[in-house]
Image (cartoon, rainbow, N blue to C red; front, top):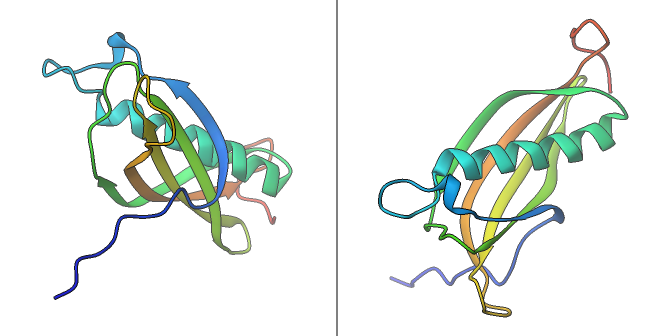
Length: 129
């Protein structure tokens, strides 16, 4: 059985980058998964808003996988790629990668998921893309 090789690098476009801070840790010192997921949601929203040319909302998150911990001081980068579109919705594949503090080029994929975003009008009702 062949081992799956690690990904060569992020897939998609860089949508968001931030620094993991102590306020976002659990008692073990790792960054909360929910904080990373919220960054991914922000990245999906930014990409979807641009694609829909207007307001969007998150309709679903699926295939969420936490692959590795994030530590305080790591740079967290979220990458987006549009997987498919419907009449009012878009599905984005989102990857979060960490760049450990003080290291260059040693990125590690920490989370991946699919975010379904829906274009909405001023009353919050779905609208065509």
